[in-house]
Image (cartoon, rainbow, N blue to C red; front, side, top):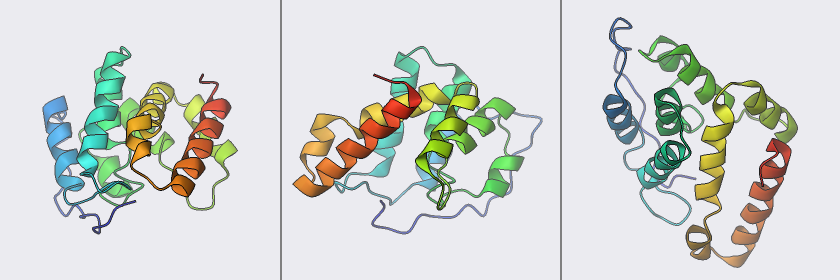
Length: 163
């Protein structure tokens, strides 16, 4: 996905007594994914912002919006599972991030079942899929990539029960 290697977080986990605000989560996600680009060469943070905006527009909670900002951080290696475990985030946000984090070799059916079993995660993934499948975003890709991704996103949406 990314042309540049993802940055790693060497910062200590925040003090759990003071939960991160949404603005702090956004800033953290932007730093963690700094320099990454999507398949079309756009700054990856544009995707994170679109997913977070989609969650907000769909009536998501602050915990879901925070999870949207961080939804790819562990999967992309921008932040570690250890960092997430100690981060000043609610348990629900952490669970949603881990639910939408793909695992190497994991069947898509197990991945989607985990999303469905985690409260709040479906809305985050729905917003992610909506942005990933945006025709304007897909239009800049070559035809084989566009067709492969369109089929992949449709399959995941079907397994999640999304229209």
